[in-house]
Image (cartoon, rainbow, N blue to C red; front, top):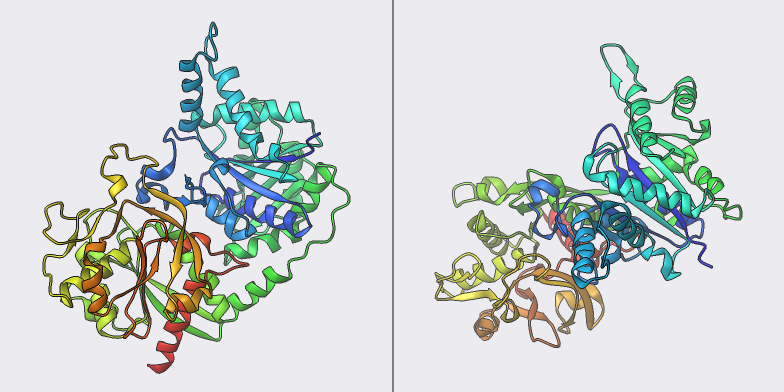
Length: 538
């Protein structure tokens, strides 16, 4: 008999309250008590996955080992839990409807009128229980995107209502995250928006078991009593979630508030051990008490929205703590870099990271940033498009191939040092068709990356269509840009280095997707260390 417990996290009053962080923090506490936990995200948009969404609109697209393009909240889940997620951890309305329509076309519902209830809701319930039915997890936490009352969220809310009834009170609970706003004119916190949000949830047939209240000010005892009374929850189930200086503080804050204790009691899990957060708190201690500081320029095309490079920013936090330094990330728009502005823009940096991206906008600025890092012996890390820009820069300025380019930017270039992958040339659909997921890479002995990983074969996650063109490899290597990481099956160059430079590495894959609190990514750790040494020399 399957005894997996299910926790549903819904949101009300406002979006962007941090359901993902609350879900990840609770999961961390339950994991620290010895339970096997995973988290999934249900997204109410009709895109099949976020792979074709603009980073300005939805933040970064996160990629799993099995090649799923997913919501960025899965990155939080992995960073907190140090457990890999998969295709099953992110479900969208688009995927649900696609599956139901395919079943209808195959004749699986012959004679039936296909409707939201029961066909769509059954599909949602099936997806929710997919992870629980594997037997790999004691507890599955499901975060439902959007806010209660949204038209597009209704099928998910109805599915939760049905599941809660089917599974029973000991096996499922609902946490509702709301906002308790502070009105400065009145000088008080207001509970009415939360009351309305809970009422909307109840109109859908769901009673919240736990209320997590986002707030800028402490909730008084009286306020908690009032919320408990009018929102139909026990007083110990009214949890305060006050603004934190870092998201990594939230598990400890939730521990103090007793979120894990209330959850375990409601799920009738009585034999939990005390939480072991020693390793987590050691990381926090190093993060909050740095012994030095480095300034690293993040050269990107979507820097206006922090979430566009979420995993990179978090990787710098992990690597900074590992090196006991504060990493100050200076976001620089590549469109603002040219030969006139480059010196004033980049001269006070200790390292440069040229970020991933798509399309030709801002490309020349990225190439200029690579040149500056190369010529000034500044530690450099290029990721995906950043690695490709390093190859183009080297080809133009060292090999003297002035029109060297990528066919992504210039289809007619005579010197495509970066070209469309062979297996991509016949692809017409954009969604889920890139080179995705974890692929092997063989490292060259004696290289920077060989020392960084301390391993001959590594596995890293990819998300790209264009690649290093091996027709130019001999020229580039002879001129001093070494290919130090190769895919053993395809011969695809995944890593380039300049051995004559203090620290210059470009990688085709996305190391930021695998950095966690417990395991900071070695490439980021080494890059930050190199930047710190450069800062000390200055």
